[in-house]
Length: 316
Image 1 (tube, rainbow, N blue to C red):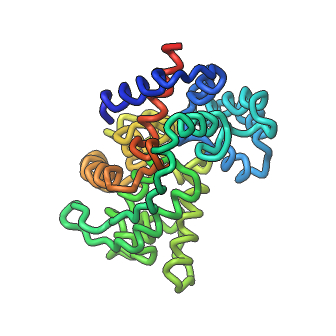
Image 2 (image 1 turned 45 degrees about the vertical axis):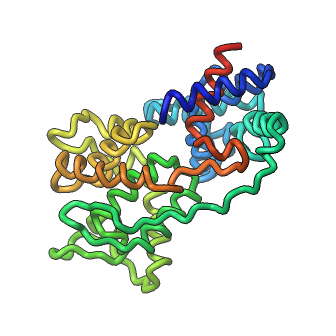
C-alpha cells in the first residue's frame, strides 16, 4: 500500500491528539508484534488440539522442535497476552473491543460527522475473469464459497489467496475432479494416501469435507504426507522450512511454501510462478481484503491502519 496513505493517516491520528499509550502499544502487538491477520489462528489451533490457549502455548514452547517458528512466536505472544486479556487469548475485536477497538471508537468520536456516515454494504467479491495458466477453467461460484469458508476459518488473507490460487489451478474448484490416471482427486488433486475419494454426492458438502482436511493438515508437521521439503529445486532443506514460508505475511513467500511444500505440483517452480500470478489477482480483487468499519476509517485498509498506528506509537 502507499506510504503516503500510511503517513497521512498517522499524521491525522497525531494531529487529533491521541495519547493513550497503552492502546498504541497493544494495538501494534506490544513487545512481540503479531499482525492482526494472524490473531485467532493460534486459538483455532489450540481448539483443534483440544486444549486451552495457555495449555497449547505451554505444549508448543515445551516442544519447539515440533512446531514452525511462526507457531512458536504465536505461543510466546499468547503466553504474554494472558496478562492483558482475562481469558489468555488474543487482543481481538477490532470494531467492538480490545485496544484497537478502543482506538477506533476514540477516532470516530474525533470525526463524528464522518463516522456517522452509513456503513457501506459488504462488497461481493467477483471471482470471474481471472487469468489462469493455459486458460484453465474454474467455477467462480465454487471459488467464492471456498473463499468465504476459508475466511470464516480465521486464516489470513495471504494464506487464503495461496490456497485458492492452487485450488483454481488444480481442480477449478471442483471437489470431485479426478485426473486422467484416476490417481489424483479433489480440490488439490491429492493422491489416495492423502485424501481418498469419498461417496459424498453433494458438491458443497464435499467441499466442506476437503476444506476441513486442508485446515487440519496445513499445520501438521509429523505425518510426512501433508508437507515435504518440496524436492529438488524447491530451495527448502526440510518440510518445516516450507511450513515457515507458508506462515509468512508476504504473498510471494507464502505461495512458494504452500505450492512447493504442500501441493507439490509436477511443474514445481514453474507451477509456483504461474500460480503466483493467480494469487496476486485474487489478493487484489475488490473486497477480497476488507476493513469495513464505516465513516473515515472505511477509507483505509487494514494494513494501512495498523502501520499508521505503529508510526503513532513510535512518535509518542
